[in-house]
Image 1 (cartoon, one colour):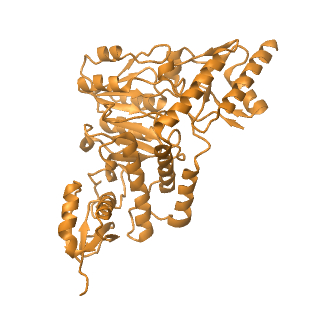
Image 2 (cartoon, chains in turn red, purple):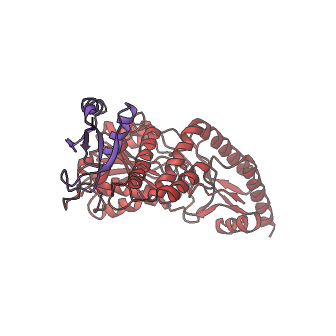
Length: 385
Length: 74
């Protein structure tokens, strides 16, 4: 089996992830930060250490401003619904996932003004276009760092500087990039960073969150969920401090244990090594697919691409091609709109969608070669039929 | 002589865990224990340490900019 759906969920996971989850299941298992017994303390420590690893990975100012949620969607919703108020203005790109567009459209119906800066047909948001859009007072800029459709990465450092100069908060959706490329919140001018655990960070599903930088006003961010935190239990009002204010209810501790194992794997492997391998896979995919007759690539510029590639074939529709790859070649990928109608409109692949191959650090060159052979064969056969 | 124990109280478990880590780095012997009922009605944990180390512990917390609620004798 060849798994090319890492942009949805990375698979397989490094042994460090499975080991951390097994240790938690066998030896800890308790509720973190609620009771005072030693297993509860151990569970709390697992979560705290994962916060610290993530803060180190992202250059965050304070591990206690790493807020856990179920995924990047949870982190993005916390930032958008927690901070934007009726009358506020928010600017975004034409490459967003529905995890940004849907909360924004919901906020729009409550009186938040939403503006979209069109992206190029390769998926690039031009910093000058953003600058022009920010002539009017803007409260927040939210940008997808790396596209889940064609792997196009944005110049976040430059975009962040422009957003901040205009007095806006800069929120980055790092669902596709966290763990794949170097992100430093301070250097890259990021105020709020939404991440998920189950893709490039190699954790299990159900982990992710939001990292809140120093400039972001934590004190006026509203929690999305209220409830028990194990702290300030004598009061019926929500605690004021992070992370407790934003993390009511028992967390996914076993998942966070696994995520901690994933982040340790990344720190030990080194982001530059991960990037080097994934960049080679991206080049092999783009060069290989680009040389097949009847295949149309929706490629990102070579200097700013992840190992995620979208294409269509004249021979077969995306859904037919996906099914043939699965049934006849044991190759698993994702077809359709990838929850990102906005990005597909920008790239010119709406409403038919594309076939997406997404490789990860554990994908081999042989996997890519076999996938390319399969597409070559199906393109030829399909056209004959 | 019987060892005298003190506890440092925090807003949250996360802060108590950070306190534990800072102290261990400085070789102060600490343990997280349930908060004694007479000190707080909270259900969280606090950091127990030998009272003789109080000045060192305060210095460690100050250097690490770690907020704490109180220090009390057990």
